[in-house]
Length: 233
Image 1 (cartoon, one colour):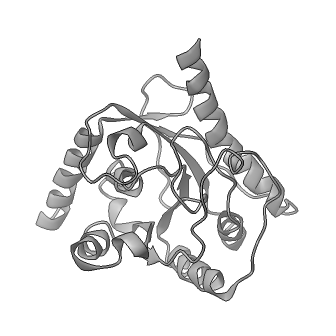
Image 2: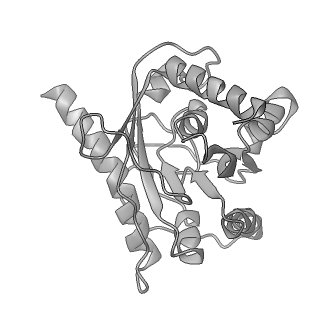
């Protein structure tokens, strides 16, 4: 491991310590998950710490080939851009329609695909990454939410799964990261968080966009709902 890799592993330790992240595989009390050599990782989105934390928990040998997708309107200038691209190897995209995250969004509804050319261009960049053999970290809701709900997914996750059907699509549930760095805040507040890595999904040959996205979203929504039920029990 060279000096740059050692520095990145040190940074990974700092990030996971700061976020209090406890990482476990689905259905275990604390067993470490298996990370495939290439995957499309998707997670619920509630904090700017999300992609940073997901990158930080990856094994050292995989980190150079993991490409988080990050919003250019936040990460695309100055020092933040240098950090996002230079350290985390992020792929920056422009959000053309940043929709509000409301309780209505969190209800399963028919998924739509706008077919707009900017989004097609975004997807081309992501498929190029997959074609190069690298992994993606994406947030299919398209915007940050409150942390205890999952909005309907945009079409990109389905298209990526169809483009590379042999690549596992790995759901990851993030818990409490929004409480560490709430929306609008810049200073983290120490709290324990959880990162649950679920069993991979694969798109079926004849599976519709609506069904696949509902199935993928359900993994995260069910995990968060179980957590909420435990708190009220």
